[in-house]
Amino acid sequence: MMRKDLNGIEELLSIGSFTESLSDLSQEEIAARLSVLQGDVSLGLACVSLREKIMDEVDVETAPKREYHIIVPKLKRGPKPNKKNLPRPLTIKSKRAVYPWI
Image (tube, rainbow, N blue to C red; front, side, top):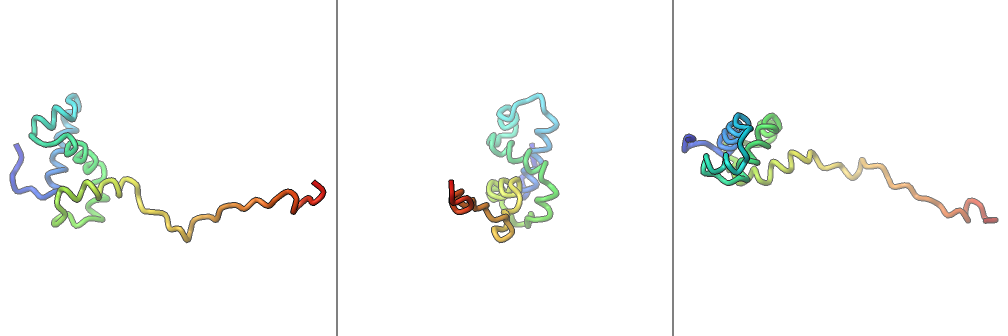
């Protein structure tokens, strides 16, 4: 049984920690024991593994649990590459321009 007044991240970290401690059970079995969705079990595990990033980048006091369904995948992917810093695609010139006799 969990406290009723947990904020979103506290609830997910609790679910994730509980899940790690019962690695012999499936996520579905743990979800049934905790009366939560299997997706919350999976999300809880992800939050445990991304805890430092979450604490650094998210206002955990105000972010509701449903927001972590968006936040966690973004943190897993990492920052979007800056298009200005990407290498330019190579342009291959026609052999005729280089070797007109071909």
